[in-house]
Image (cartoon, rainbow, N blue to C red; front, side, top):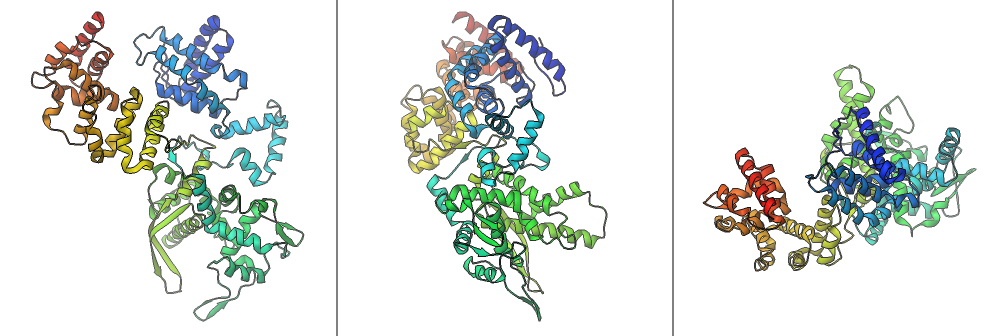
Length: 634
């Protein structure tokens, strides 16, 4: 049966899936058959169309990422999922005895992940946005099959306070243009809760919010339009330490301030506070809102609510053009809608981005959205410069939030007393990483690592060994950063008791540490099981002599060295880079002629690596021949 399908082969996939489900149902029942169908759907939809090949990474993604994010199950049905997944793998394995890794081994791996699977399914932080909607609606008694009931519930939900909506679902808007999927994000190490509270409390927006709520006290009068009284606005310029100016004078002309709405910074924090229910208006009175009772104790959640309000309701560009004069605001909503995408990009790469480059991207996006017609060059340049100006203004607001830092921006005074801004970079702060992780985790996989950073090396390696490769590496790196100069020595002590996976993670970390780990790793050379890894480390950090790789006349040592390379860097590196120099002067063919007699699984893996990955077809063929001899005599 063909089990490899392209993106347009949905009908063929469904036929093959249904045949497999029917066969499993006949033997193991409909419950496990249905689970097999779910697993096949997830594998085809999210992990490519190759149902003929399965990896440990596939198992982890399906059980710990895709099922928790997308599949609604009650407690009783959850317990059957690992069993059904294992049944499917064993069914497929009956026709694929040479599958690497063995599908029987993968089925056993599924069983070992059962407790983590159940925990992930019950952790709402893992749920996708859609699953949160349907789960919450179901919990509140809504029949999902009743379309009118669902529509009524969604309408009622949209009228709830921002803080309540976020508590249930997180952010409502997609951080990608047009709702596009942003894909999984790299792991992140976040500050501790105490550090986050301190950072949030020190953010300019939070300081201004606290002072504003304190200033309102038991109540203040507002205008008929719901604005702050002008006198209050003037006091708040000083109290909140904003850059607003009353009665601006440019050259010999004075522009008199007639409304507090003209005070950009004061009005901006005022609008955020209203949208976040920190302040409310009753009649002509401004009063502390229900959320103000949490100040300043719950600074983290209040801060996050303010961040969402900035992105989803107030919008820095829309606020700047709040009076909507002369059509200058034509791009405001779309530009503000781009901010989540920009920040996700900063989150993905973790590096400073040139503001000029981001402005070019924003302009290109607006060009696509509005299909800007041909206009005079000077008008087009004005529009482009307006977009860049407002993008920089939005970055200023995000910097006030403590989300980003702005560096190396060039400020040039103009003839009219203004400042022309150019160049510069933006980068997420640790607080920004936290906010974006919380934001992105509602709609995609945005894993957090660092939970093991205070553990001993031995405990950390055991726990990391159960994670997917990317998460395990990130967790180990977080541990190394936390332990600093002593990390290499601690890892070398723990390596002696670690299992194969933990050993590989530790040596890869030592390779990333580099020459600074030399003294610690030298102490492992006396262990016959670890000496080969020490050699690999020394070669990779350029500390080894040419002779250290040479295992001529020592087929057992050659197998052990090549197997260490397979563990650390994979079969292709062992076959294409290490096999020949490690064989020494007699050559690889001579080594193959003797190495096949070395007993053990290591020999099987090394010969299979060369047979499957050596670039010379004749060498690969010779390795496959001796591999058969090895398997026939073991």
